[in-house]
Length: 266
Image (tube, rainbow, N blue to C red):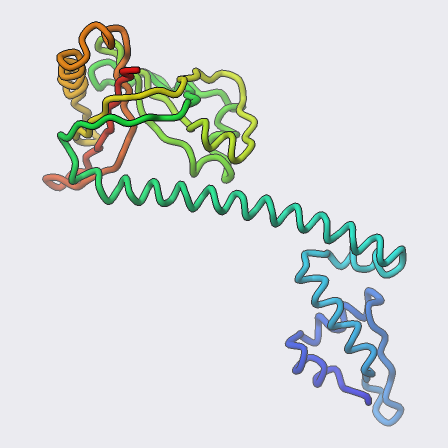
């Protein structure tokens, strides 16, 4: 049976240009109709196109398809499938971790505004923190972030898992970008040097509104520390207050930042 290029295009859902391209690359061979000199394709050409379409959907490039056909087909196909298998495993692993992160963020945003002023205890995994900028009484200095660090933290692979916050000592807040050790392990992230590592521990936590993004009111950190000291005394005296951005809310026409304050108690 002979088919025109239009017929092949219709039942394989390919454009005529793509069929001509595959023919030019030697994937298929056409014949010429003697009466009108139009291209025609036999069943074998259609079968070759079906193979090629499947190979493309298995992530093989046309160059790899050519190499596979002209070399050791079985060996080459096995190698290409092994590679695609590993790529998919990596993508699925990333996707599973990203789903967990999205669930975490959803819960954070859905509950944080309702829990402002509440206190609770929770265990946190270790965290890697990178210093970004200092502020004193809400006034920010110059941003300090090396290119080698920002290249990793703000990459598509790592950035969805980064949190932002501060460590408060006296009246100075050291703002940082942080990533949980649980995510670095699951994603096998090779972090650049320059981080400060905070080991896993048990923390007293609370949610506070630190005010408009135009002007933060950091007085809540002092109140939080006093409450923690009243409950745990000298046990937490030297521990800094850590703040992590939990969510934002609109108040009086302005966007306010809700922070989760944390202090290590064990």
